Length: 291
Ligand code: SAM
Image 1 (cartoon, rainbow, N blue to C red):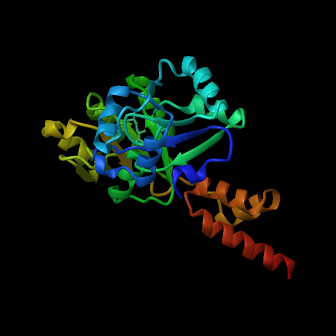
Image 2 (tube, rainbow, N blue to C red):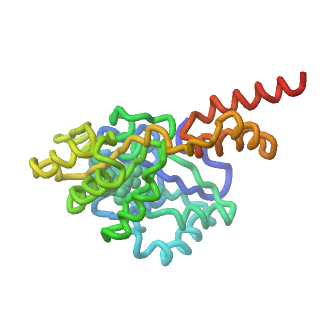
Image 3 (tube, rainbow, N blue to C red):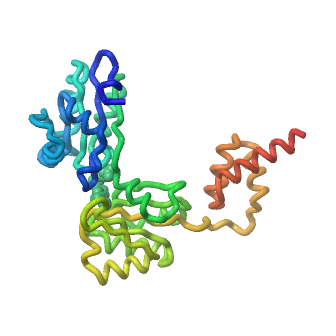
């Protein structure tokens, strides 16, 4: 389906358009069509977006700047254009808008006003990194950028250290060494980790190892601290369970007071076990009780 086919008969539409995270050939056909047909392109950095538009041969686009510092100010004029029937494409510098990028306030206000909002999905550094990290992808948590100050960063890592899900973080070259040192200290030197750098670009690299091994690489090979990077950290093997907690008893008690899906989720969070396995056990238990 092309962008024009997804439009409703009247009224404008806001298209949230994902763009490449490095290699311009990763633009999707729908994204290129949407950008070519848009009445206005709201871009995080118009100069940056112009490079992509030139590559796509889109001449004389109508561009407006919409970034972190002017989003609130720009929202009324974008909404006015949408109410007047404009097709507005929202793009960020790279990847999917709103993912550690501007656009949230615009999309939520457009939704509140009942306007059309469509996704034109495509690249994101989050999914790109996860897909090549070699770490479990069935359950993951994305934390964006950690706080810059050491105390706040460590406090955030403390809260994440017992999570059984894979953790995905954005990081800057300036802070990467400190962050990986902190992960190694707080999560444990053995925690598996993948540092995914410059994905889809010339110097793409993925360094896999324990937190301590990757920390050592960063201290001995300064080039590994360069460029754009995503840190993927394996979840804790099993959350610490108090020896007194009997798993069957826990499931019985939770299933008595909670719906099966919620009970299995809570049990998985408490024990680090698998939600689906608990869910099946709760259903089996309910079947046994009915007989
Ligand atoms: N919205 C974007 C997305 O969906 O990918 C992310 C924007 S965020 C401001 C930029 C961060 O994404 C970078 O600091 C880096 O952590 C990560 N990133 C972007 N491009 C990347 C690439 N090619 N390789 C590795 N990480 C990348």
